[in-house]
Image 1 (cartoon, rainbow, N blue to C red):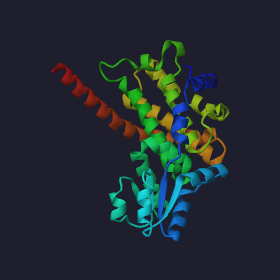
Image 2: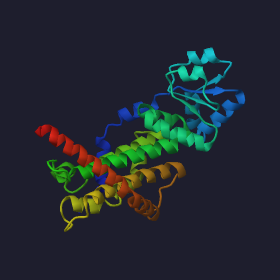
Image 3: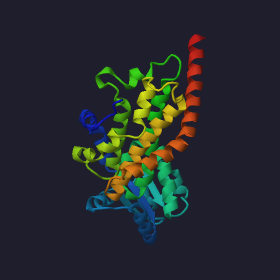
Image 4: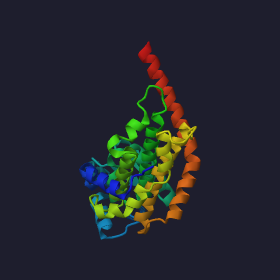
Length: 306
């Protein structure tokens, strides 16, 4: 059973338009840090954690707007619109009245929590904030990897619902034979977005080519492909299909994160460990997802019949 090999991955890379990803990532967000001079130094250090080169430092400078607070209350009103405000103390009435998310951070742990909230609530600015604020990259990258993994799991699950087009028709078009093109495209988009978040050129085919072995050899794709085309007698179960898709995609995203953070690709053994660990807990996540899909599908069926 064929998987999406390096040549297929390169072809898919060339077919994908990166213009919108680049546009979202390269626009400069307006990020206000407010407090005393000492507090602003701490905020700057937290948000700049993980700076790797001069380009990272320059993007951070472009994004940050420093305001002495509370002495600069009038100034902060003039700084709006902003995408986000960071402070070290509880926001007062002036900050609470602003229609801008305000996050109180004073440590790595509070920064982590803020990053998780930003990822959930500011999807439109996720790529830009990650690219310009190195301290938020781990949380934003993790969110992106998890949501893409869930999307691929849902693709694998939806074929099992009655009345839905068989997954083999969705995932395995004749022109692509048994390559799981749609899932692989989602993986490539994930890698491109992670490339943007980590401050790298989004259109660098050469850099993506270095990651092609991870995308093209994603763990679990062979098992999932066989199940989708009925080559496994008795099947491995609907939830298992989704869990394989989830874990395979998560492994690709996590490997890309580690590559950009460490500068070298995780070994095959390390990627296998990530896949196995993810597969263990992905089954529970996917089981809940499938229950919701079934309930929604049944509700839609009753509505259409009524």
